[in-house]
Image (cartoon, rainbow over the protein chains, first blue to last red):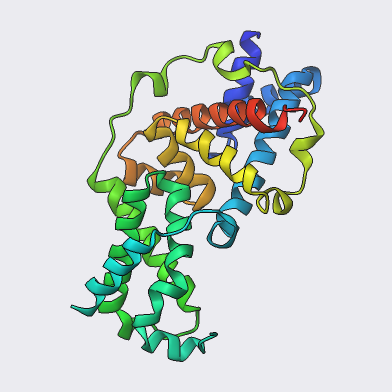
Length: 81
Length: 188
């Protein structure tokens, strides 16, 4: 992987957390036009954000975990005190 | 038995049965430790019980409880700081980012709502989150699950802006790689 790709991967992440400088935006746009690997990487980061948003939204009904019965009993007891 | 929201709030005895599993799932997605998640849920119910006069409806009881739990998790991060490791910040190595070089697997474009309805997918997602170093996982969860801003996250985790951006970059790179290896790039 080239140095430019390392820089691009970093900027692709940081563009989600802060406003990039003009210079950084130009670097990013230019590099993404030329580099298939980095545009796929960017596409996957976007997908990851969408998936995590959905996971967060739906965790309370979709995530397989359950509060163990023994803990539920303890919490009920603690709430009575 | 369905309970009317208003009555439900007045009847804390039913809260644990109605909302215990949901709150536990909310917590386990973020903290990846069953005991800790259960402790946080317990604290949430006890705080909610004391504060229940403050619940005015307007939102559902579930939403109100989840909001309290979210704050409990942030408090937990504040009180139990983790050290930011050298490896959370070390210079990017190509292998660290693009090992299992991205290729265009159409599975990445599957609709997120059908993915999260798949139990196997949850197993892989939790497994990959659990593998992230603690500081990375905390920053990532606050950003991508809870939608906090960079400034808000920095105050919770006590890191500089530059370090936070690097930590988030590492977390995304690590999670992308793990998901590619164990789910999206997998032909099966």
